[in-house]
Structures are given as C-alpha cells and as structure tokens.
Length: 289
Image (cartoon, rainbow, N blue to C red; front, side):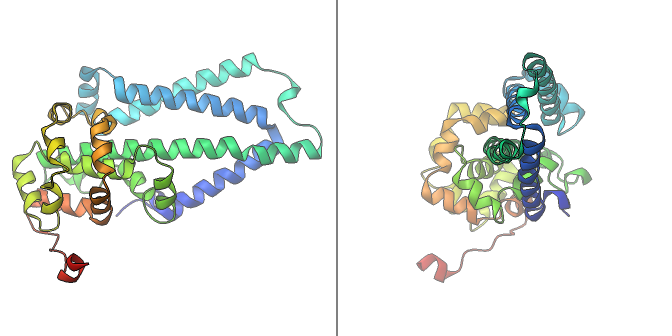
C-alpha cells in the first residue's frame, strides 16, 4: 500500500496548511523575513537540482550502490545545507525591526502579500517533486528489471509515490497546466523507456495490446534512435534523460500525451517484468470513437 502521506488528499491538505501558515507568518514576522526564507529555499532547491543533474557519474554510481534512493536524498541534503547557509547569510546581512510590520494594518497587508511568494515556492516544490519522482520511478524500473523478485521493489519509492499524489485528484490537473516541463508525461514515457535496455521486459511491453500502438508509433521511432536518449538509457542517467528536449517534445504530442495519461503505467511495467498480459485490448466502441 502507498503511504498515506503520499496520497492526493493528504498533499492537498498540506498545501492548504502551508498557505495558511504563510498568512500567520506574514502577520507575525513580516513579509521581509518571508522573502528571506523564500530566497534561501530557492538557493537550496538550485543546489539540490545542480547536485542531482551535474554530480560526477562515479559519485552517483557509488551512492546508487549504497541505496536505490541515495542520490535524491544526497541531493536533498545538499539543498538543505545550501538553504541553511544562505539563510544565515541573509539574516546577518539584513537586520533590524524594518523586517517586521508594526500595527494592525501593516500586519494584515503583510499577511495578504505573503501568499505570493509562498504560492511560488509551493509551485517550485511541486515541480521538483514531480521531476525527482519521475527519476526515482525510472531507477525503480531499472532495478526491478534486474531483480524482479526482490521484496523491496514491490512498492514504488517514496519520491515516486509523492509524484503520483501530485499528478492525480484535484492537484494533478492544476499542476499539469502550470508545468512547463510536462513532467507528468515525460516521467511516464521515461519509465517505459527504462525497460528498453532489458530485452525480455521490453518485448513483453510491446506485446501488451494497448501499449503496442503507442510504442510502435512513428512519433516514438526517432526517440528510440536518438543518440542522446540511448546514451542516457545505457548509463542510467535518468535525470539527464528527463531534461532532454527530445523527450518533452515527444511527450507533448497530443496522441502520445493522451495515451500516457490514460494508460496505467505502473501496471503495464509490472506486467512486462512479470511477463503477464495485464492490459487488455481497448473495446471496439472506444476504437471507433
């Protein structure tokens, strides 16, 4: 079972709770302090993304050998350290009572305006979780293809479960409209492509009736022949694979995008790993429409 923390209703309550907490923060501490916190969080997120994307391959290979999720957690630790140091630096640079509002009116306006940076931060955190969750799912697919009977591969990693929660329910359509990277579709397509380096699982995937038209379409053929895509798949560089414009361009094609949103990707991958046909063919009525 998925953790309750990763379900869409719980994540929605967390988002609302953070928005309400920002109002209280703006009233009590002022929008100046909130902006300092926002800047430090942005610096931390940039540091985490830089580690996640540009870390030397020997280091990432060593971390991945320790644990399947060691690379994203190391990136998160790097981001937290950068956030803490930037927060201390800004606190030392900007001091004084001007950062905090005085009087009922200024406090009310500070609380209201604090929603702006907080919503921006929530959007950035959601995008980061969806993107890193897609990378975690591709690593899970790779590991599951190598050892399909391993007990710790029965469930998706925590980051992938968070990605699923942020791509469903009420939050999913809202974030899809505000996602410049199309991370919902690119992560789904990347998870399917992660099986490409495992011949038996890939052939099982092609045999599934509802997936074969998608994987054999002309829109995906250039992607499967692209040197950058093949290199990223060969070396399991999934963060770089998600950043490739070829992947996002293919996933944004209307036919491919609609198919990726409609198909149960995890079920299809598990069926391919197990060698069982889990997805039946689409009904004739649906094909006729």
